Length: 203
Image 1 (cartoon, one colour):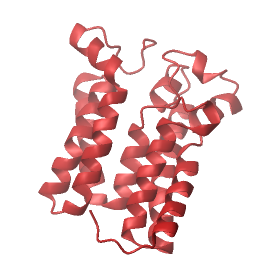
Image 2 (cartoon, rainbow, N blue to C red):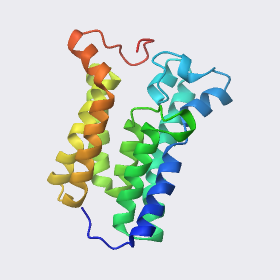
Image 3 (spheres, rainbow, N blue to C red):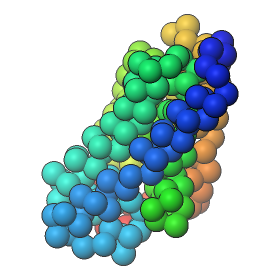
Image 4 (cartoon, helix red, strand yellow):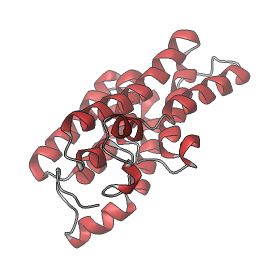
């Protein structure tokens, strides 16, 4: 963790701003704007890019992926520019929690993978690139989005330590644990061999 530099009140304000940014449900908004219907009633009901892809609209899925990643990165970069590194971590973590528990959707959000990767890229880009590379390698090999997400999340603290970014490792590990918890149902299907592949219409 970075050394404390920011006053508690400002740290709380950074976290609140990060949470509000992270809670913007871009998947729902993109799907609605493109006339794809209510994303929460499609496929798994998840608000992330993988479920948007199940609508058959790759452009919408890509837009959702980039926007969800961008809100995590933006929270980190804004807090770092205005305050300090401890505020950047607080804002990034809060943005992640905002995606998982968005106030606008009765606290029923997504699994946070894109936001997790986005905030990692902003916090420590070598760590973020390592996690993204892990996701890409697993996705290309197995064509299972959830497996790639779990591998990328698990690899993040390892990348942080291997690359000498110890100040990022603890946060990466905590958020990775939440990613795994949010993928409980996917883990069960992976073990049962019933998890759908990328582009499928399963859950």
